[in-house]
Length: 532
Image 1 (tube, rainbow, N blue to C red):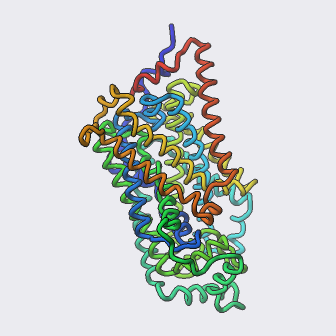
Image 2 (image 1 turned 90 degrees about the horizontal axis):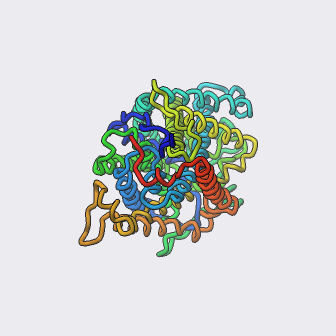
């Protein structure tokens, strides 16, 4: 008997993610409480010889994100299956395009997952600093200590094997804690407005009593190293504003479209309106978090000091600081405030890690279900309704990458890939949305949302506008040299990203040839929507 196009007649996944859980899932995938101090503030304050416009960058970023998310929601509602762009690009445009785009994103997800393990490992000492001595904390900076903390994080995340409902409950608790922590820490930051230099100097004296004005020492040391303390206003090309905007966009896209990758487990995912509500509300929430976790700090510490601190990589002799701005929080917050922030950030890092793994595993599951990958990766637990083999494989790969960063810290120079290369995926999806209504009219007419303005499909208009905005903001990678040097494009990063696409192409053709020898034509699977 000839094998069917798919591994089995049904995926085995269950639709149990509701509207609110879907919004929180998308919000968590794109945004965390530490987004402001890790992604927003450094890009705004630390990189460039020009002063950008904070609010204009926020508006440009938000409009761009909403347009792109609309394109994803259009496609996902037409094919509400787990696997995201692999499923809908592979069926509407080209199987190779769908797989390689999705495979490259999966590889980026592994790096992002490893980075979230690193966040967890870095946040435990911040929590410990509120009640432990520096000597006691030193164990966490050893290789063994960091691996031990990583294993704690990893083992907690293994609980997601018990089903999607457990993850949904955990993320709900995380956001209750997170929104409370944003309000509390924001209040302390605003309380430090006009007082930050004095508070910082007072805190620094306990570590470096010989330097009474550590605030200005940080700035002066950064200037001596090449930092520009008084950047000029930017010109009409807005290099600083666009760099900040593309940092916001790179943080959220395609991450705020997270539910499309688990669409096979989302209730009423065939509703384009419902998918739009989920991703747009998530985007709005993301920008509220961005503003709530960055603006109070910028108002209190100021751009000059923050830029100097970022420029020095958080390294100032004698101070227990790291490259993360949160290491400065003890200067303006009481121990309980720092502890509350650390607990919230720890919950966020665990939740984001689990969501990254969930998304990655569903991509692998989808490949396997179509027989592009070995069929055992499509195995689903009968009890918990989760793709357990794909979950385990993705967990192991993420942990392996984290351990690699301990051996070779230079891997973190590839952090820029988390921002830049997903934008290539976004452009592929938006480009497909632009031409799809014209080149695949038969499939377009079957979409649940196919509005037109005049004779032009709304999907094409939205896709065109999204492409223009993404390309415009991404131009800052090539025109803003300080941005390029810090989180921009390097030869190593280009090789790193291109290799994902090359490996994906090789896997696709090897799998197609292997299955052809077995008498299976993989193209049959891509001519139909996978079963639910």
